[in-house]
Amino acid sequence: MSFFNKFTTILAMFFWVSLSAQESQKGIFYGKEFDIQPKASISNIQEDISVDEVVQTQLKGRIKEVCQAKGCWMNVTLDNQVVVFVRFKDYGFFVPTDSANHDVVLNGVVFMEEISIEDQKHYAKDRGDSPEEIAKITKPMRQLRFEAEGVLIH
Image (cartoon, rainbow, N blue to C red; front, side, top):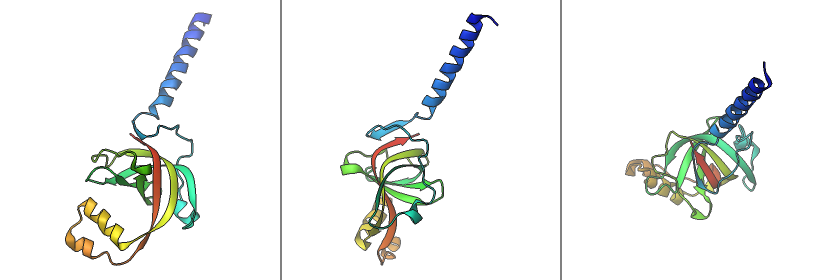
């Protein structure tokens, strides 16, 4: 093989690898853009985190549902089927209300929080739950939460 053919082959492989790397970043950023970390999912985060702990991390998952009022929160199912409730830092950005069933990478902090009855009912109304379903909310609950500085939706 001549030098020119070897060079062309190597150059083609370089471009192919570069394009493949960019594929993983394809999507739309909301909030602050970020670089995706190689290990962007924690499979047992709900067991590892205490109520008072806040952990800076990235999580990957699939958007389960989005606030239908204005896209101000979403529930994301992680790789281990745990659902995390996601808010956006300082209420600084929202996501499209039709984002459900899209893959997502979250960049920010994860923490465990106790959710009051009042807040649960508010989120149930945002989801469009029936008055009967909302009336069934009678006690606080513990929930995995994420405050996103940035979100990449694929």
